[in-house]
Length: 418
Image (cartoon, rainbow, N blue to C red):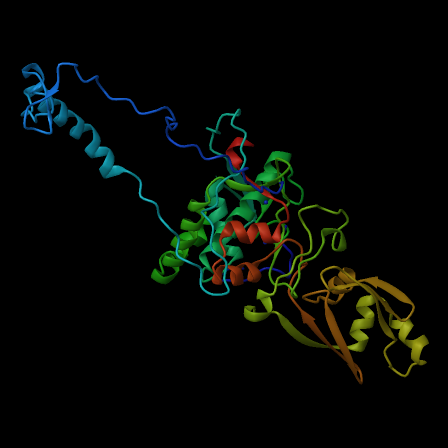
């Protein structure tokens, strides 16, 4: 689910289900063989006939024992045995795996982990053999485009995230987009889409760049290289989705945080365990839309809030804006409820009515105008796209990005669920 003010635009248009902490109790290291604590014994008994020769301090052996200890030249069988052993051992030595040690992460950055892999899959269920298709309603033409799942994901990433974003952020976006559509397909959820379509290409679901638009853009060498990078990110995460308790999550994402993400119940109705408020400090550093200031006429504000009469009662027609007071804030530091005159609004409702980028904002009344400054861009639930970009630039992997923004999620293969 993508917020209408959360998308990032690129030439056409612009955050996974249990925590998987793996570990094992260290076991006792055992030697390759047990020590023999018994007394050492000779390999053979020295015959009683062995006597010291006169004038010699060394014992001599009967003639029958004089060949013991001599180095005899190797016979044909010994030579052949040696050659066979070398033939068997040498290839194993040449291909023996050599340990690789990851380079230390730059100062102040975490050590990147391995490539995203499913951490739990249902091995009892055979892999999906039938190609999964997605039917997308194209709002610009009013037609439906049906294409393979992975091609659809490439179109979503191309539309939702700029290709110059960190590569691991592109991979995280691919997994989030795949999780979103797989959840809908599993639930046979076609809400908001015309008959015959699974989703639309709008922010109501996920913005999608049609195949025809991709082919047209690939004629430009620079754009072709960017799309190739996106396709690579999709390919490297193929079939991977985020789950919670074995089911695909609601992988909501948005453009820019105000420094934190939101708890789901502060924006929608239900409390979702994996959509918890977490810090997102990267946005303020790099996101161009982190802070925005707009100016509106006070009369327009009152009209949009249905409070034109309230202003008259408060100021007797003087045009003075009614008193504004914040009543509560959310875990994500946004306005939860606010009173304007005698009316109380939710911060999310006020944001929608006034068309604000975020429900964290400050205001100043200047005569007949209201100057409003917002922080962040979008509903704030799930993964911040600019936050993901900031994490990728600092060396975090797609796995770490997703586990940061979606609390307690796991990874699985979509083909084992569809």
